[in-house]
Image (cartoon, rainbow, N blue to C red; front, side, top):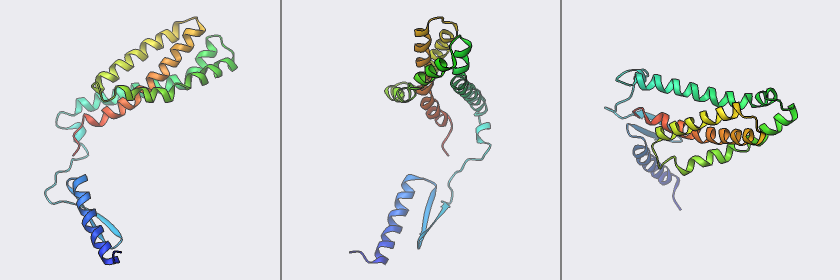
Length: 178
């Protein structure tokens, strides 16, 4: 068995070594039962205005626009589906039933992203997914067939859920990590 002082000493050594290997530029200083974070002298840190300086302004603007459109499309579609179905001629009960059936594609949609998220470039994946969503939204809006409407709604939900992890994974990758 370890003595308490030996355990604290071991904890200090292991905690210090692990923190340095996981977070370069930051050390954890353990004193008793408290941990303090301090910057290593000479470590570089980024300023808050880094996303708009040094050539990153264009990326930031494009990313903000893309995220605004993606979130508007995602939440706009999901919140308006029952209303759109009702205006398409379905009863309130039918539109809520179809909306519930379409929402079943959320989990498979997120799992669908696992098949390709690390195999193709994320920007390409996002572009392909949102192009397919746009096409399916046109089909959803202009179809007269209940089967096509339900199938396109399922496809939209599945692809929107697949694009979300791609978009949120791509977002931090285009900026420096310091």
